[in-house]
Length: 281
Ligand SMILES: [Zn+2]
Image 1 (cartoon, rainbow, N blue to C red):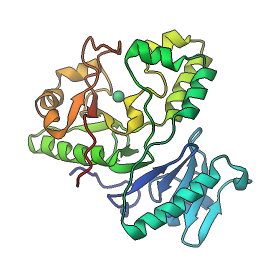
Image 2: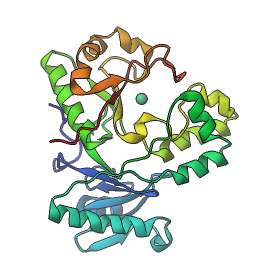
Image 3: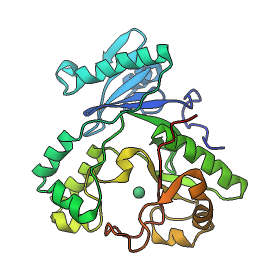
């Protein structure tokens, strides 16, 4: 059972996608919780929900009859034109039955890192990590431990579903802690820590720099097992971890940050990444 039954609605297609643009995410209807009664009715009918990436604000719903704003001054929202174009392209793609995943440009991220006082080139050289672009499209891969939508690259979503099923056949329950994370999400963590008075160096000792996390690609996910705290080193003592060590490679996943990895990132037995994009199937 790779895709647990959704909590609120039974009509989420397994091939549901998150369309990604620089400023705005386009969610499929049925996955986002309404924050008011008026919005609940609109969200229930929405084909897509436009959501601002920086703060999660719902901006508009795409209904069969057109775009319905959820905020005043929608027309002045940064990135709206690109979001609308993406909506139109999505409709065309459905007609043509095509699925094409590209990546978003990195330029904005480089500028924002400079603003934070983080030299991306120097960090890349020192860590051996690369800036990772966000994909233009992500696939719904079921729900995470907290019943939030789990988004992954389409190939990773398929591989994760197959691996979760294979584990279950061996009596092992794998659950997802976290999959795709946007640049904005990771920047938010960084900015909150800076605001609390930590230095860039102190933050980088614990977190990968924003833009450099494998989670941005949609190919990586943090895996847990029921009864274990999320993202703790103790995961390595579980039968779920032993199963992953024996079987994950056959499903295309590898452990990104083993003990004493050359990137200087702490040992993360929970963090697995698809080693190659699976374009088939
Ligand atoms: Zn991770």
